[in-house]
Length: 259
Image 1: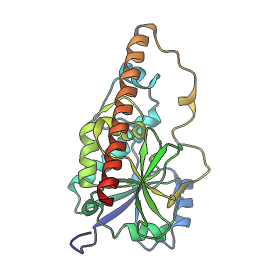
Image 2: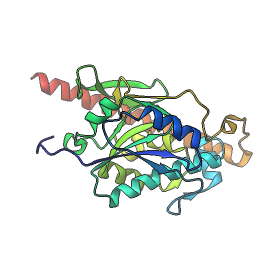
Image 3: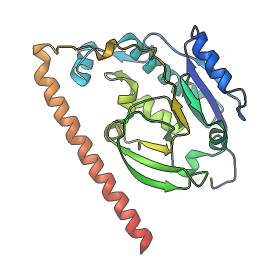
């Protein structure tokens, strides 16, 4: 922070209204939380500001999206919209199947990320993507901020500012991938994929409310196979070029810091 002002932070926990067992477990673990939080109603259908086309999803993802994926996508999109009209500067967004280091999250809630030039900061990710060190000793000695390359997956927890939410709101209007896939696409929307490491939250070992049918085999229709192949190759090329540019910029910044 540069002005000494603590951020106005709201902590929301996305959860289905009827998920009594999951909510109960989260509440039990959060009884000693040093900061206030509240459940945020998860959506079960497509947000009215979004558009979903099944053929576009097959081209992008190789299969249609499931109802649970569309609901998850819409839930996060709704939270970003609400942040724009909220008096809070930033949201800590959690899902209800996580175990939280509340001491660290309490510290994080006091930090104005926008003043640090950070508009989106993950607290967890699922896939061991390549990571580059961006900042050591973030809030406490053992924590760092890393920048991820490629897809890391997961929306279990993150902090987002008004500006960061605005970027995603503009980019994510057309639903062609699960929301975590779309948020990972730095090479398209331009928002750095930053994360705290070690993670201050972990995912509980429980079944996903989205369900496992999304992993079932799906045969891409013949008339979409060529388009999917070309889309995949262009996507991969854009990702690789973007990652190379980011590596060069980090190298240049380190070189300038030494001279």
